[in-house]
Length: 134
View 1 (cartoon, rainbow, N blue to C red):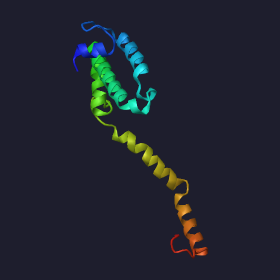
View 2: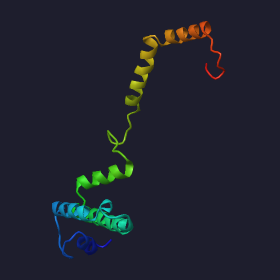
View 3: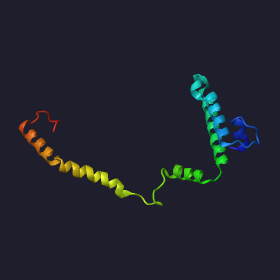
View 4: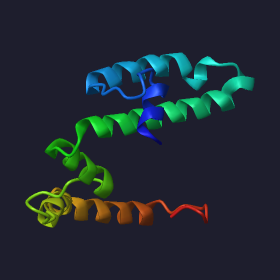
């Protein structure tokens, strides 16, 4: 999408330089006017395509307004990788394993083995006649 086309779609003059707040305000106004849910069923396909163009114009203009500052660079990294890595790229596998160990040790320590023995005793005392039940 060209810059002038994006500006015209959001209601700006072709060679203007809108600020980020102006772009957001124009986008909200256009979304309110052209959201596909506001149109009857027979007009929805054209409304959806117009809505997608407006969203694309908003993304284009907002990325052009921000430039290459550190906030947009961080944003691009988060979108590309899913989430920023902590401590310069190292992953924290130990922090993930600790809660799992607490669950296992807590279950065993709080009577997990006794519950298994009680289940087996009850199964021996009251056998089921249904072949699909344990």
